[in-house]
Each structure stands twice: as C-alpha cells, then as structure tokens.
Length: 203
Image (cartoon, rainbow, N blue to C red):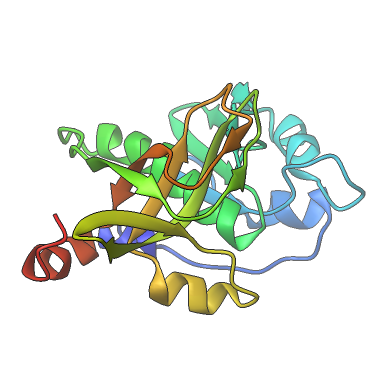
C-alpha cells in the first residue's frame, strides 16, 4: 500500500458495501487511527456515499473537490484530530489523488519536510485534448527522439499495462485546451523510476 511505503502503520484494510451505514461502521474512531483513507464514492451518483457518511460521522469537511482531473472529486475532512482523505474510485484518479494531494498531508502529519518532486519540461509526442478549466494529469512514458527527450501520453486499454510502462505523470496546467505534438509540458518523474532513467541518460 502506498501509505505503508511512506512509513504509515497499517491498521486494517476493509471492503464494505456501498452504503453510508456500512462505511460508517468500518471507520475507526479517532483514538485508534490518526488517518483514514477511503477509496470510491466521492462523486454524485447513486453509489457515491462519502459525503453522506461524513455527515453521519459528524466530520468536518475541510474541502470537497479540486481543479485536478482526474481526481477532481477528492475530499479532505477531519473528525476531531483524525484526518480523512477520500479518494475517487477510478484507478487513475485514485493514484493521482494520492500522489498529488494525500501524500502531502501524510508528510505534514509525520512532521517531515515535503519531498521535492522531480519535474522536468519535455515535448509531448501525441495530441492531448485537455480540460481547459482544470489541471489535467495523465501517465506518460519517456522516449528519445532525434537525440532529445519526449514524453508519450499513455492511453492503454489496460491500466495494468499503463502502470508498468509509465515513468511518471504529465501535468498540463489549466487553460490549455489542446496540447499538440511538439508542445512543451511538465513531467513529474516517479521516484522509483528515477535511477533507471538517469542510467539510460534520459535525464
């Protein structure tokens, strides 16, 4: 689990049915857990029950929704001193919500300095139709082209394959509706891929 890799002590992982009552029963009290991470149920559909659960829990919703896609339905709330991060359920949105939002909060809870991310400017290989009013994030793979570093946006049919191939995340700032081949974008390199990329002289 990503939180364990950051030094968190995992109390339990539990899968519950899509009802506020079941989720409410599963959430530990603040005395037994400093941090709760939920996955799924943050949108506005029939099975999106996080907001109802938080209200029943009498938790304070600090903010609900961010201008990042995917993961725009991320929710941060607190029950006393207990921190609750509610991540969207889609795999890509879950990963991005944790990497860009929850991870920062966990570092702060641990009293650690926020680790700087390796962010490099690269040219993009394929066109991306971005969300103009939000930051658009997608997985990418670095490639060499004419002796320069380019990034390929990954849109594989299998998210497992995307996870294996990805070297990091392409981050397209808001108000860029269309990103065309050859345009420059910011690329956040995964820490676990950094050593290999340096060895390959990519960066």
